[in-house]
Image (cartoon, rainbow, N blue to C red):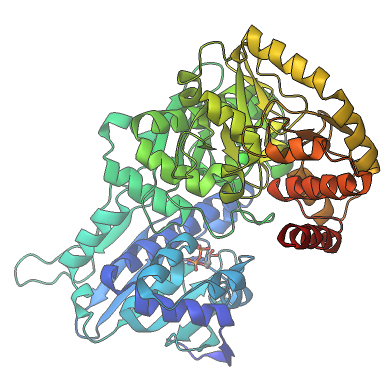
Length: 632
Ligand code: ADP
């Protein structure tokens, strides 16, 4: 090794230190994955070189046969990985092997608990990558040279994984990256041809880049020069026929493309021929990545054109609400010098996007049907994202709707487990609507007075308590021919679920209570848009309904939180004529007492709806006055 120049010692970014610590302490049960991670990086580096060489063929000088070589030295206790991919220059080495660039990493690290079992799951969401080298090594040397730079521009990075790394300039004859792992004591088993071969076969067979090991000498004679032997299949997985690919291979390939540590939930592998020609291999992850809700988080598919890697995170092929899908798409129609700008739109992209979207929705539908338990897990992780679908993707609204899951009055668990098809299978005779109620939490809506009449009649109501539910429902008007009805909104009409006698009786009561309605209007004045007799209450004295066109509580809160002006709207006050309190109110001759009691009922109805009171002190004062009178 030649003289080193420009030596310096730099500290790792705090997040890297935390990650290293965690890696070493949490992932000890599956140490061999370090090899998969490093090979995966080398394969990416080869992909990047091939791509850059499309425009600059001279980058391939010194050898266009890209490969990764894995060797070992039993005496020195080292394992060495050597690739002739894109390599890194000094700045890149410092940036890539000293920091974690992903946004939100600091927040993610804060979530670590110190509980190793839990943390190893978390770290799975994060992806382990290069730093996994320190699971088995107590010192790592990286020698790298970027393709297209001179041999003198090599870089040597070295670290014990303890907070800092050394970096120096070094002569490197070939482009690419060589990583030397100095194995910890106790990890010497990896300096072994048989062991390495097995690990590589197990995790990296799908890698399209040839992975070579030194041919083991036969007998005593050592050949003068090392002979290399390719030990993986070295063909792009998605180009092989489905029937020949084992589940394990699909799973390992997923970990490579998704930088995930865990197996995917499901996948869909397809080859399209005809007007357009492309292959796709799409995966549903088992777990949400930590940055799912970060706007600038990477998303999208790995794009290949005629087997040549073009870019990571091509986000033009799937809508935003399917941003959690990982995988590859390999097109024969796009040009090799396609750019992000060109990808923005155009007939080829549009038609691939709509076909891939449908594939994903079909895959999810299948998962929901065949593996309901797994689908539950999927829903927990990604349901909220999928709920963005109906607003974004009008054409697939119905398909997306079948995938939605809700809490419901039919399921005491409160879990979001009821699909619209389940709901429809249970509708009452004569029921032509799908009823739902939105609110802040399951606990709050479960006992809402709005549900009383439904409980009495045994009609199921969906309980929607995610922040975006009210917004979601504004995009869903009907499902399978049945309209959605917000039970807290407007003048509830149960249609055929009320018999003719019911309706007649309701009209009569309404007529009989016209006087009370007028008195309440006078008492509540500006607070309400309307006062009317309720037919939806059995136990509660009164309730507030939202006007047909008004914003509900959730939307109001979202607007308020984002600093927008919320249009003013007043609730409709409905009272239950059969309730003893209302009967008492009706018989109250003193207008002042009537007014006080009306306001208490109004405020109580607001509280039951999960709203806050405009003047809580006034409510308390009125109520206390009443209590004093009662106990007097
Ligand atoms: P990830 O692969 O998820 O980005 P890693 O920590 O594994 O994270 O790697 C960080 C970065 O270091 C990579 O994105 C890549 O830019 C660079 N890198 C790692 N290994 C190599 C390699 N063998 N050749 C070139 N660049 C590499």
